[in-house]
View 1 (tube, helix red, strand yellow):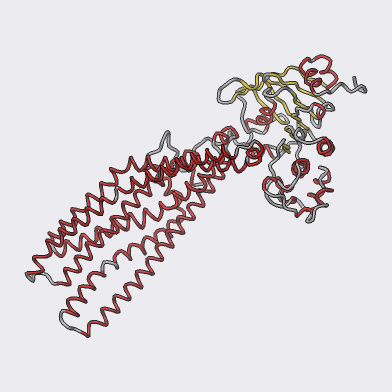
View 2 (cartoon, helix red, strand yellow):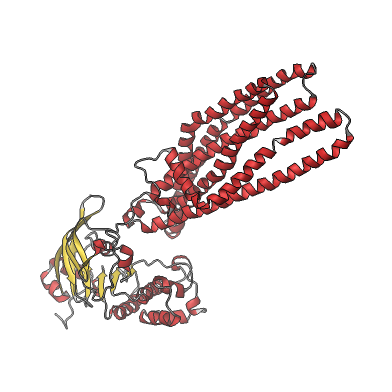
Length: 591
């Protein structure tokens, strides 16, 4: 992708950022070149306007040449038709390049977000990522049109007008040239303030987007705790910061009005200079009007250059934010070797240690093994490191030391995506996506037939409730599966994991949030889903793991003990205490 071009250490400079932005437009250079050609042609043809006015005044009206009136008027009309056509072609071409370039950038943002390690992704609030995709990308989108049509072409137009004025009279040319330094150097003086102001606006927009995303997603909790007013106050503070930042940016942009004052002051001086030769008959009235229009033609492109510069600075500020996100290291891929098919499903942790951000170790010298086709349960108090084991196994993160193997293959040397194909995962709070139930079950394998989908749903104890709905498997479940109960959503998630036909099934607190009846149905589903597969279970409810083939007890990041339920209850104080706290006594049949 284009985002791979040129990583810069630290904060990138404006030029390197600009070049990197242009890289997204490179695939569409031909369209951009044709649009530039159309804009350049329009800039040339528009220079004929004042001269046609001169002909009209001097040769038609001044000399009472009625025969010349029709050709001049036809030429003026034809000129406007040509200018409209060229202008439309240029605008359409630049818009096409800009939109396609933004599609590439947005694709890179989304692709990169999916490749980030979970730790890195969690450092970026959801609203910030959304802001990169929306407001930042929109701000960047104007660069392509602004750079070519309003900077490059406007600059050419200014130079062409000045050249024509010089050709008429060098004194008028000097006056026109005197304007150029004001328009050229004022943006440079504004650069620091514009960049700072635009960066604050983008930061404020990202904060507001993050808060909105958080509060909309947490609407239930806000209502439950009567915290709507608190959320409203925070939103008002963020919104106030945004509009103050926008006002500051407007003030900075207002400095460009100085150019208008400079221009009209210079224009008055030009009339003073033109007055004497016109009165003395040295130049015609038509030429006076033509020169006046040429000077007027300097104002718009010069102003556009400045306003475009301001917008480009805003876009560069947004681009720095986006590129900083895109330059965040993606999840480790080791040697990026494609994982071989997992046949046995043997998992080994060998002296694995891990910590987040080099802080307090989360895991310390953890070692255990799951035999192929068996169920391993991992238990322990909160914060013991249970979920971190899953993150390591799925290569969301990599161990600081030690190694993890699957069927003897070191996972650190395997491509994460190809490794995860062999895993089916059911989380405590499964993420279901808006769409039909069938689509969610097919989530891991889109090629599954309807028969295979229904078979997976049957294994997951979901077929009966699905067929009882009005539209069956075509029933749409709403955002995050909100139209399903917790137990139904969990069984759909189990069906999704089963449908992928994984060799290793990972259950991370898969039933801890369910009521007794829903848990019973889910447990039956999980028992069927686990048959013939290696299964790793993370659970707080020890009733869900007492039948496991082996149990690993974690405490403070270390393996405290391992064995079967009845063995651990007899010899491991922590395990016994966890069992007793849940009123779980050893099964008399096995004690």
